[in-house]
Image (cartoon, rainbow, N blue to C red):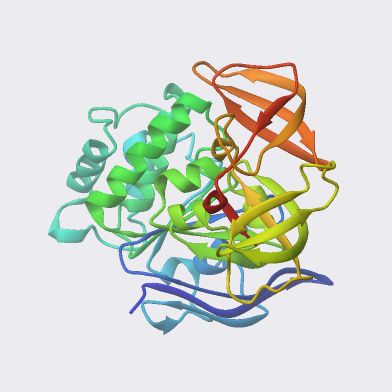
Length: 348
């Protein structure tokens, strides 16, 4: 039985609908991420699980039990907020001990022993007597994590905990958070708008859009097999095209791409069941699947700008009236002819 589940959850704020029929199930010990743009409903979902909001309709279950009416302090959850929310008038030790306000330490240890355990866990031993303002942003976030873990909650909730940190520190801290989660085996619900972060830390993730879970799956499945144009465009870079199926030949679909110039309008895609001539389709191709060496599905992109990233370059251009992103070894300013293997395109 999942530690955490939402069944047909709806949340309204007046006339605004923040969540609409959201159904999710997080497995015991899983690192599950909600990723999406601002206003998609991911933080609202976390607040409903924490008990800081109540659903307008639907059920939130913790440990298989309906959590309706259960106050936040009585829910078996720990919360780490984006703003750290450390008490400035308390030492590090006192901040972590505050996490034991409503419950005793696990394993029969004393509160001080539990604090020492957690300081070791977050790689900050011996810092218990410091004030929060004496710590770096990354250290403060690890103290906030230690405080949330103090009572050994069944579910850990993390609300964009890395967003205030610089890029390099974010990468370091997310690895530490994942290592701690793996070591403890605590069921974790993580909220972020950063697609790379979501792919890096998650066992599974839900891509949120307009109050719904647009797609749920493993990072690899979401990245390699997006099911909708929104997921294809939001998770990683992608090139989206539309067209009409002309025919099937040699086990492939021949598609006339909308807006493509004469001589380049037809591409071949791996055939899928249910498509017949005349059907309109959408498909996407990742930038790293477009190669100057590919023999099939070749077309010429007019380059508008290029960025050298060290070891590779990102090129922006246009083809078939659509913006196109390429990943090539060197930046280019002249038009570039690329192609792709039929199997590298994903039908949406």
